[in-house]
Image (cartoon, rainbow, N blue to C red):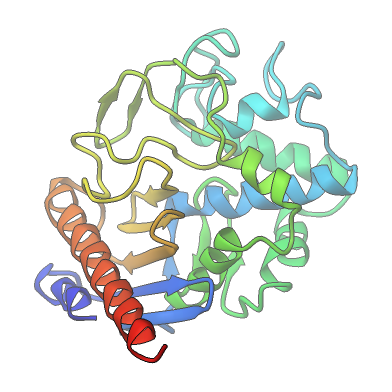
Length: 284
């Protein structure tokens, strides 16, 4: 896939990119077995582990968690009312506003520990990492932003998102459904969106002007990016997902480079589909 070579011109010391479908990795480029801090892409893994706990009966989405009046659902969807920073205080009533919050996910990790009677890093490993064979993935600090992983491992997670095996299809679908719709908010480092759509852990703001994943992704796309310079998106209409990991922090450069890469990946996937369809027609 020629599109992936674009990362070589990004002035990033180390980088890796992988494109996968449910059938397996379709293309890679760069240091795909190198460990990177995935920053806020960590939240996707924690959210998935939390939903495994819901299915196991250890958690309920609407049980109290976080500040007064908040629930697990609020924490997962950035509507608990905390501010952005790790130690941020409550800024809004639960459900009143979408405030992207590291503090909310730190609280979610603590709540998950209490509910499962396991350290969050152990539960994450047992619930998600080990079942998916993500041997080079480890939580080394805050459950909001401190997982280290590889592009190969995150491609395995992306395949799980395309074809869930750890969660029931209905649970996986609920995760990518917008919760508390209509709330405005700011996606840090990107822009203000009205509304700022979010599921349970997964950003649902794709295919909007100014988005970091470009304009070719479908509105059904879900995923997230990390401030360390990482992203993962899954486009169910294209039947594909992309993972990018690098060690140049997210900034305005990424808002120029990442959309072009995502658009080019999806253009090549579309071309591959047409070629496969033509080949199939020729053999019948």
